[in-house]
Length: 337
Image 1 (tube, rainbow, N blue to C red):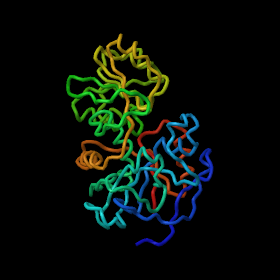
Image 2: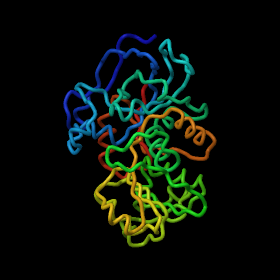
Image 3: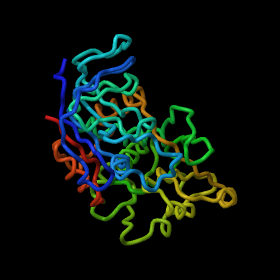
Image 4: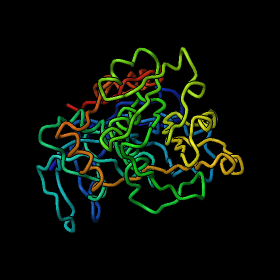
């Protein structure tokens, strides 16, 4: 068993990267159905900085509990230290990765040397994949999977009543991925190619070589031309940027097409019906079984995870400052000694 205390990143107030503190805190204990994991790497995601800021733009009724002080983070790769008596399938020494407690707990305490979570949130880490790349896979990989391949749950999105049902992708489909160089985008591009689709990648010109190496059939540099002006007859748009500007992609779709904004914006149901298109979104949820499937694709080389940069756990502030600069190519990861 570990010592009684550990190092972790906590915030005692909401604000910028400077509120992240490296502190000594008690090691959590696994409850029923839970696993205690010694963390080796932590994947950083947008919800981490939304939570750090106190989610100021989210209506109060949609905010999950965020009691201060809190330890941020949801994505980990590490080694099982202990399991609750009622847990089957994992044992001390197993290497695992997971998206933890999302979205029921927006921040699950991943920025730490140890973390607990339900066993069902974890998958075994493929032997040939290191902890940095495994930690980078969880939320981004599951988001791409649940939007494009299999939702895997029937929980409604908090942003719309319509149920999200992924379009069946094949060689007859064209998929446009906006924000294709980011964490979700570069994995979504590869999953769409795995299913045989033709993929149009939208990003800044600096990422063109990277995205073509991942399999993009066409590249649009949004700094030189607007994708909504040049792309036409697209079956599916996955807009990983989303928000109010996502509506502009409606004009790129053919009748019967779909737009999936990862960050939902404002849409008009009557306009969508007139165009003959659907607009749906989902909220990614922890799912160890799906993560195991994605992990197998990573292990056999079908997909790869790009690492933008790594920082030691104690330098979480610098990692958040890097995230704020934008134009990421893949994922930022914290490493734990």
